[in-house]
Length: 88
Picture 1 (tube, rainbow, N blue to C red):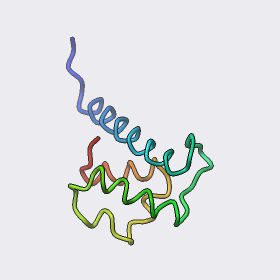
Picture 2 (spheres, rainbow, N blue to C red):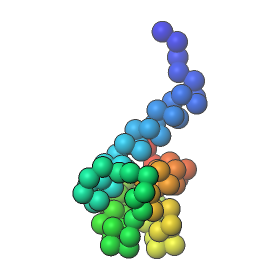
Picture 3 (cartoon, rainbow, N blue to C red):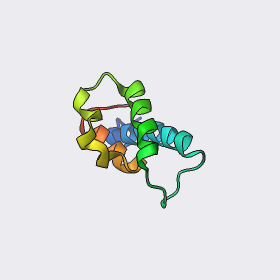
Picture 4 (cartoon, rainbow, N blue to C red):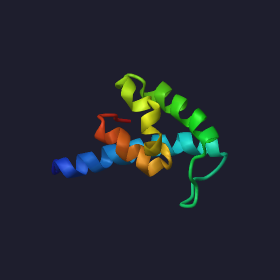
């Protein structure tokens, strides 16, 4: 069996993280996540503490208010968290 390339490992890690993040968003939104869904302030007040509870061992600055724009959708949250060293 061939070894996975670095790009394949990163893609798999990012996909696993996206699945965990999407699960949190779907729980807050009360159903399946669609392309038209965006987080409201009320949603973010539940999403960010949930993600912090799961991935809370990361630096505190990830969860500060100036980063709220990075949590409007599961995909943007995943990109932001992955760039900052968060893994599923």
